[in-house]
Length: 265
Ligand SMILES: Nc1ncnc2c1ncn2[C@@H]1O[C@H](COP(=O)(O)OP(=O)(O)OP(=O)(O)O)[C@@H](O)[C@H]1O
Ligand SMILES: [Mg+2]
Image (cartoon, rainbow, N blue to C red; front, top):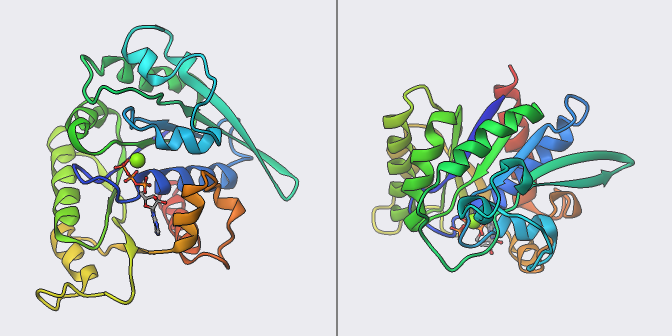
């Protein structure tokens, strides 16, 4: 079992949820014959619940318990925050299990200990991959601290700007400080606009800036209006927007295949 954190450190809006959700669905599809619940997506963005919203397909899902209920002690059974979503593609059905984040006005929690209970409890479902979508800003440090001991891999997500690239680097370093064995997967440079490939102030390509900071070649996911629009309509089920229509989806499919190849070696 591998546990992957998708993070941008303190930088918000880089596309973590979009990427975490799409990778989860793509990988669950690819691994559908290998396990009953091949992928578990934990939406730890408890202040916004974006992945949850997308998975439920509505903004106010009628669910009994969410991660917030677990964190606030309204349920003590970690598995009670998990939900099953089934997809049908070309006659093949596949499952994705996800932890609903819930919605709250709070931006900090008294204790994230129940999140580690959840990470322990999901072992009983024998997933091949657990993907954690992390929140930005205030909660980042807490989430990293709580999840780091469980992580096998991290996917840094950044956008072509200095603050985002620096935040991704800081996040990787703070995970390494807790978990020296962490495997850093190809960092993603999301929302890459090919009209502006270089940092105008230095003339250095953004891919080079990212590589300079993270020490690894970034994987480019283009800025793509289909992804933007799909998200607004709460309909970004990767398999609804095909790779031919969307450059970003095509690129996420390539990334997913590349990463799966590495993880399952
Ligand atoms: N490649 C892309 N091209 C165009 N729009 C994108 C792309 N990736 C993400 N977006 C859009 O950018 C916005 C932010 O994406 P998303 O919510 O996934 O970011 P996030 O990092 O999870 O944000 P937060 O920090 O608030 O959790 C969304 O409207 C999404 O549709
Ligand atoms: Mg998010």
